[in-house]
Amino acid sequence: MPPLFRAARQNRIFQDVVDQIQEAIIDGRLKVGDRLPAERELKAMLQTSRSTLREALRVLEQKGLIEIKLGMGGGAVVKAVTPDLVAESLDLLIRSQNVSLHHIAEFRERVEGDVVEIATQRMTPSGRIQLQTLLDEARQHANRGPEATSAFLTTDKNIHLCFAKLTGNPIYISVLKTIHENIRRYYDAYLVMEAREMAENFKDLEDVVAAMGKGDAQRARAIARAHVSRFNGYMKARERQENPAAG
Amino acid sequence: MPPLFRAARQNRIFQDVVDQIQEAIIDGRLKVGDRLPAERELKAMLQTSRSTLREALRVLEQKGLIEIKLGMGGGAVVKAVTPDLVAESLDLLIRSQNVSLHHIAEFRERVEGDVVEIATQRMTPSGRIQLQTLLDEARQHANRGPEATSAFLTTDKNIHLCFAKLTGNPIYISVLKTIHENIRRYYDAYLVMEAREMAENFKDLEDVVAAMGKGDAQRARAIARAHVSRFNGYMKARERQENPAAG
DNA sequence: ACCGGGTGAATGGTCAGACCATTTATCGTA
DNA sequence: TACGATAAATGGTCTGACCATTCACCCGGT
Image (cartoon, rainbow over all chains, first blue to last red; front, side, top):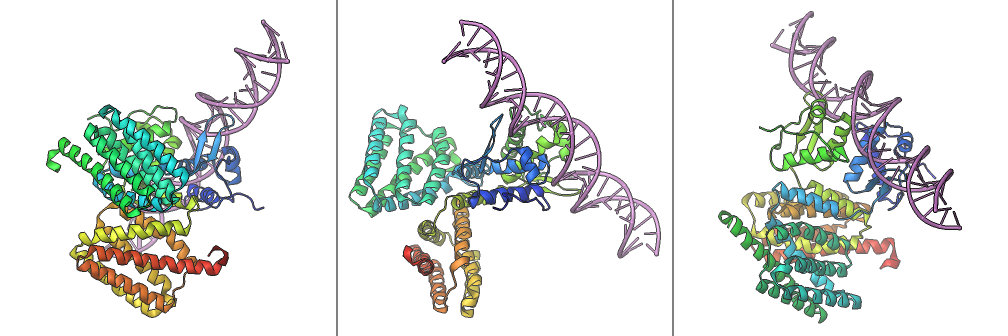
């Protein structure tokens, strides 16, 4: 077996270290949960200094590839890559005002429609049960009125994520997770739903699931898209209240 | 005016430094193009050591918030936040999740359709010119036959990215960039197009652009989707040749 | 035998100071 | 004036030390 790492050489040595470890993770020589050698060992393996090595570890940590724990028995552990970093970078884009809520909304509207369409074709018995459970949950929150807005939104999100899981396509799952993480910030900041709005939205969800149950993918798609569109409408209305000039 | 930075204190000091500088960038106290003080000055301002400061700079660089240049007159310069990091992290996610070509293809087929539909509604004069130029390029590659497969694929990619830019939605831009980067890995590995296939594909592109020119968004969408679907068909065929059992 | 606290070792986090490599400005000379 | 040598500014790397946190182990008391 070849050694896990070779000596690091390049203009920026830490970049070479990053590349080596990242490669090892992506092609599976390092698996999730594996622990990297201690810094003082690694620096010997890579024939570099500890500061250089640490800069590399910082980058890998920021990329979400490893997690570093303190103290004895701590160290760098290979992490499962999650949509978190995508969400974070999207968040940065949004906050630096290069992406607006409108952009996310436009994207989401179509993606959610697609997801529901595919999910309908791949419905499973256990999926039916999960959706029914989530739907019951949503109904209860909706009945409690505006004070339960946050709880309702959480269940709403979980229903959409359940659709995504039904597609079995990890891209849809990651993309939808990312969107919901980002969009939720706006909802929490601005959105308190009126009882009527909650009822409307709950009915949307109910209708989507019903259409999915009948295997009517196109109808499910259309309702889902309208559902998301309605949500976006609420947000636009709230935005106009905040900043009428933008309307 | 308050000092730009305060002394850094927290469990992980470098994290505090990252936060401070990031805040300064996001809320506009540091603007794009601004140059940060030299490391030896910054470390004094933040009352920290140079190694700690440098770990923070590595993180900010990785986040795409600053760019660091060597030599005299170099240093850390605030960068415009671009969708690149979103694309990169999405890429990481896809690569580490063993996402199959099938998953990418399924996603791409629908997204490309959406993109073309939106782009049609937002066509610009300069967009028309760019597309026409790219189309001419593609025609030339197609005429050269199979040996020009790679060049044709590159132009094909550029045309799709041009569609994405026309949407004006950075999310579509980063998503499409990522998709093409990932899918290209498969194409380069397997795909050599026959002359007939290249001709078919070129005609698809020509038809899409024509429909877009007439403002027929739905027709453009349908052709684009079929175009991508055809591409995916080629790949599936090639996969079967490699591994008949999977067919 | 068991429990609890103390203690030390492993490990990441920080620091200080030196030197190297790259880039640009400056100055002197042809 | 033009060009080349030189110096200064700046990031990149290295070394070695010490601090802070965590956990396993051991010892003593019950």
